[in-house]
Image 1 (cartoon, protein in one colour):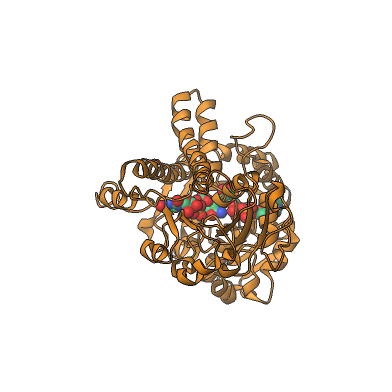
Image 2: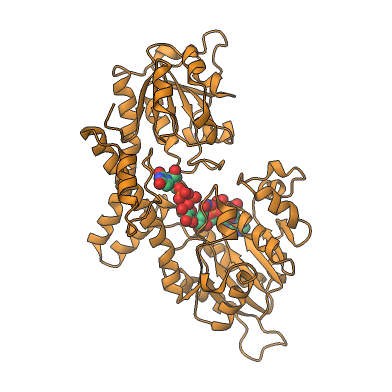
Length: 478
Ligand code: NAD
Ligand code: UGA
């Protein structure tokens, strides 16, 4: 079956960029991305490509080439499903917040709603592709819902039939376009060889066949959770070593280089930092933990859960350390937070380390000036669950300063953020922060002043020669 029309349900960080690349690389395939969120769809349709809802380097060019040609964004979910040969489900699968499995299991309500909507609106034969990250064996539930809507054999000219594939996404935010255009691999899990071939032929337009892996449904679903768990585990491992480095005189960057040159270990994902963020690592590991407990494997569950515990500990460790270095109190003190996104080159703040660290410092009564080149102030407000304040233009502080109540505001520039600050915390590795003029910045700060570099992005000698006290993660020489 040659795929001519694709519908993708979910116009988020995965659905938008993934479908844009498919449309760009397959000009003969019509791709419609649908979402319930009309504001999001309007933003994808914005004539100004600088205002797409997802910030991702290179995305504007890809959307610019394909949109209106064979790439469309719409809120007409039923219409797009009805026309499609293939429907991708790319909706959110966050951790459940209440009920059975709360705090660990994935909330599958949006995935199930999609399956029911496909069951209702599809026509002819439809291949349904799980793009969302799902607990292993979710395809069983989707198949059951779809099979209940299938026409019995011989019913009508073009009977309604379905087949289900798993095709998890491995893109990382910030490098999504590169990851989609030259993936390490594309994974397709399924039972029906013809459907697998149809999807493989779509990717085959630009991905070499030896990079398209075919597995059974359950291996595919579980591989996605496992890949994220392995990646996150490396970060928790190196962050645990960073803490030991700080106590022993070792330097985590040197240790990472020394172990990473062992070809069996490899150099990637060994950068110590403020802990991993992002919408998926924590959620997917907790999902894995839940599944392990469900299948009677408590030791395996404990093993993976420790990766998340270490990560939470690392984030709190950094805020604690800042308080301790600033003479045990940050109440009323001005702190500049540089970077709020969970990593560079994205506007996404989901589970960003900056959230937990900022909340800890607000709890201690700090006054935070937050700078990020791409994150909207309204998003920071939602993440911190606190409205921003307006600082006094003369003093750069607020009337709340000594009341013990923490407050924050956004700074339009790094210079504004550091003005009058006692310390700078670098929490996202934006390129901009690698090239700061520390001599100039130091003059704007209140002395004694500190730089806490949780991302190891600035030059220690430059900061120290500007008269600032420098701390960076995993450096035992300080
Ligand atoms: P997202 O929250 O950015 O986007 C999901 C979109 O789905 C939202 O816009 C929402 O309105 C829409 N939606 C939900 N239910 C709907 C319905 N019934 N009909 C129409 N639209 C609906 O999420 P995301 O970051 O794109 O992640 C989607 C999935 O991909 C998740 O399972 C995630 O684990 C997985 N994933 C994410 C990444 C990533 O980098 N963000 C990478 C790989 C995999
Ligand atoms: C991650 C995976 O890398 C993707 O393969 C996967 O598709 C995706 O999750 C997902 O399923 O959502 P993403 O979270 O977008 O991608 O970004 P990463 O580059 O993995 O970074 C995650 C977090 O780890 C960031 O906070 C980053 O700063 C941190 N990190 C990463 C480190 O602290 N050290 C490192 O060496 C690498």
